Image (cartoon, rainbow, N blue to C red):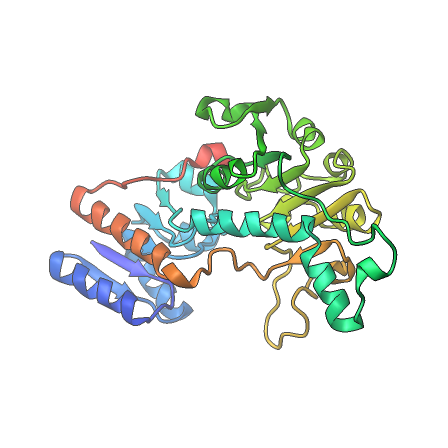
Length: 326
């Protein structure tokens, strides 16, 4: 059996874990592809792939592939339908769900509390709002709010106890009723958005969820807040910008974007067609929700543990339910 690591990761931790696996499973070939050429060469004969993405073309040539391990949460860079049709298991990681939930919570507090807006006014212009006109410094509290979680998976589940501490009412879609975690349920996304003070977007990006939060849904959120820590494309870009600019949304906390910058970095989000950075009611974060310093290797630890289980038992410990994500 061949295990192909197509990550480009050469950190000491990564190499140490591979060395440990080589000792434990001497009959398995562990190959580290350092570049795309090595990846293309080794993939056709690999039974196991560790990667952050896979194209349809690559999958078509991977005749022996049995399982794919993703040391991240998102699986939108994989051909889900083709993997499903071929019976290839896809195993991702939710090891950093609590950190991402924490970031979502922090973004909500920041945008509702106008923390960044007031900071910038004081820093750049010396504006002290309480001395301008009484009431201009008002901000919104999270206490007692109706908080909807769109995508009640690992991240959403970790978010709930944080919101409970603020006496928030938890709302979710009817499809999540079986988990018994929410206080109330909505039959559809528009209804969920209409009944929430804050909408947390935690759903994976798939063909079904892409653009699911459109202008119609956002129009239901007058004077309310949106926090997106899922993928930018779940929310229609133009509709989101217009809702913020025109004051439909009271504000948004965004950790995910539409076009990610590449060097040279001219502006943190200038890959976008719309100037979100000009909106005072937006708190921006550079897709950093999982980057907690205190447990930096959590994804890799989980991935290696899953890989070790597969090599020992010849079946995945857990796999993505691909059909439900399409």
